[in-house]
Length: 114
Image (cartoon, rainbow, N blue to C red; front, side, top):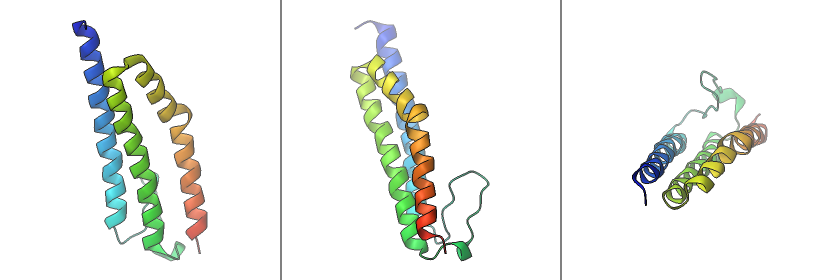
């Protein structure tokens, strides 16, 4: 394998894994926090808005853990198939992943809103 190709595969994998650490960290934080987990940066979900905070946070955690887990898998795929992993990363992040996160969070919020 040529050096530039190997280096690009390693860079892709490391970037995916760093993002995965961030998303999995958000999921773990969501499991441990006593306050309702928010979705957007700067947004605040008040305790008075949510009827079952532990269940609400658990569902948020699962959402973020699954999203982070996808990045871990894409990172491993990137080591073996750079172009397919790049396309999958693009789709999972921009085309499918972010809209699904938004829709799923809205579903979770509506489910637990008082």
